[in-house]
Picture 1 (cartoon, helix red, strand yellow):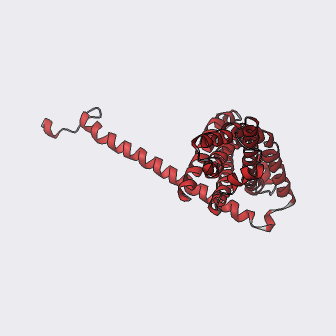
Picture 2: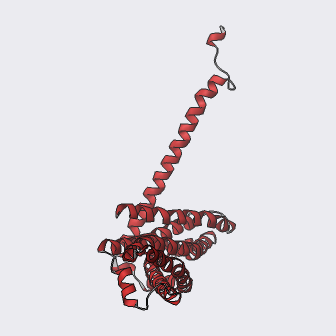
Picture 3: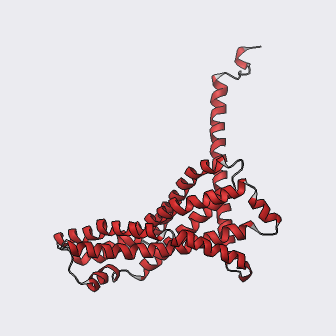
Amino acid sequence: MNSEHAIPSEGDDTLHEVIWPRRSLAGIGLRAIGFWKGLVGFISDAVAVIWQSCRPITWRRSIRTEFMRQCYQVGTQALPFILVSGIFVGFGLVAQAFHWLKVLGSTALFGGIITAILVREIAPVLVGLIVVGRSGSTLLVELGTMKTEGKVHMLDAQGIDPFLYLVVPRVLAFSICMFSLTTAFVAVALLAGFFSGMLVGITQPHFLDFLNRAIGSMGFQTYILFTLKTIIIGFVVALLSCKMALSITGVSAGVLDLMPRGFAKSALATLIVSVALTILFW
């Protein structure tokens, strides 16, 4: 047979040049399909959580008890960390902003700058990362351990819907507590900034004037953005952690392997939500 019409062997460069682009495109296609399947599944679960939370029949005594327990763990127990963080941010940001604006003779811009930097951007993201690192990791370990030990299947066998009992109260608790903790963070940061500035002689001892400059410049759009950011970040972080924990298979050692990926994905989701809402309400 003529060598020109010979079938290329498996190691032939020509065959390699044909197969390599196909494999690359197939890999890209599989990743794209997996991404969209995950996104659609996440949106479906989010809609299911909202729908079930609006049904009065969902809130049986066991669900209410679990919801209150999660609010205590996520909100009340995390409050000291939030207050301490707010104090340090107030010392470092609020007082310094007022100081440099006073040096430049632009103290009238203080309220707008604090609104743009602290309320709109820093507070939701920083509190979100604290919640991810503290409560999100706890949620991953708790649900992941329940899944590996078969307790989720035991709930299902007893006629208890794991989605209603495990996911819905946690997602709603994270959303509400995220809003409450961020509000406390902003209040403490402003107070710490005022008192630290007064001690070093940067601000005048007129708290109402200081508060009016800081909060008086916040328009209706800022309140809406602040509320949406905090609630959506808490919602997304909790739902993402629940999905990752309940999808685990294998022994309990897999839970510890899940924590770094869970933290990274939750932190990335926090930043994406913050940036997306900032662009939307620009």
